[in-house]
Amino acid sequence: MTTNAFKDALNAKPFRRFTIHLPGRTVEITHPEQVAFANDKASAVLLTPDGHIHILDVREINGLELRPARRGNAA
Image 1 (cartoon, rainbow, N blue to C red):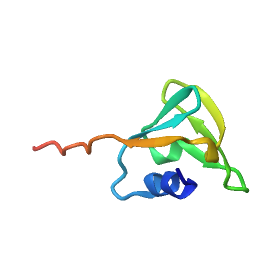
Image 2 (cartoon, rainbow, N blue to C red):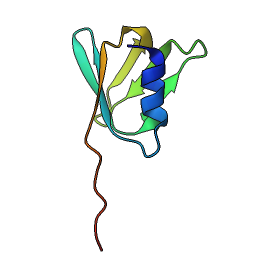
Image 3 (cartoon, rainbow, N blue to C red):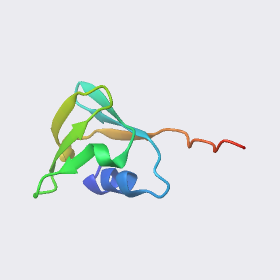
């Protein structure tokens, strides 16, 4: 998987939640602002909703799984 696919998923409009697969773990991305890139764009810090912090080499992402789009609530 390329780092561009990860960045494309973060910048998608509208944003869709997704899960990234890394060696030995998965991390759910629920909002694009929970990811910050280092200056080299190869390293990232992820903050999960449960308060865990993950520091990773983006090139180690094995896969990305988009979650179903949420439907709007009818008023």
